[in-house]
Length: 115
Image (tube, rainbow, N blue to C red; front, top):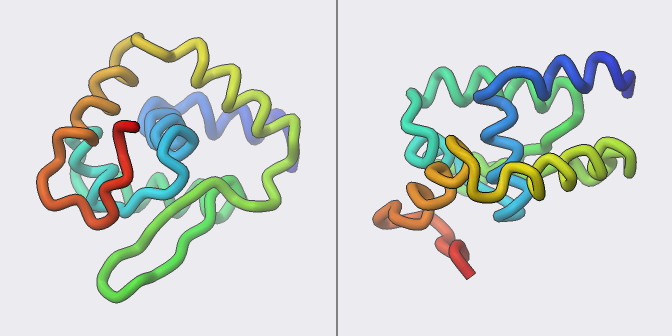
């Protein structure tokens, strides 16, 4: 993975918001991301597809649901960047609101959130 391309992918706010939630929660369904970010399913899915093609995230299907998580082979330096970004984003908008919205989502597929 090329660091310049990686940083360009992180420079998009929607992708960064998705990655911050995935890093914090471990795995999320597309519906959880659309609810938390308040964006349309096609927009979220397009950004997740970009991240999947770059092997930053991976997906799995369970029935009708598609779940995303950080890619298991993400290089340590790339994960370190995300970890540092998450620490810096704590309590800052829109990241704080994204987490609160996710925790308020009714009927979450696997609601292990908000511990």
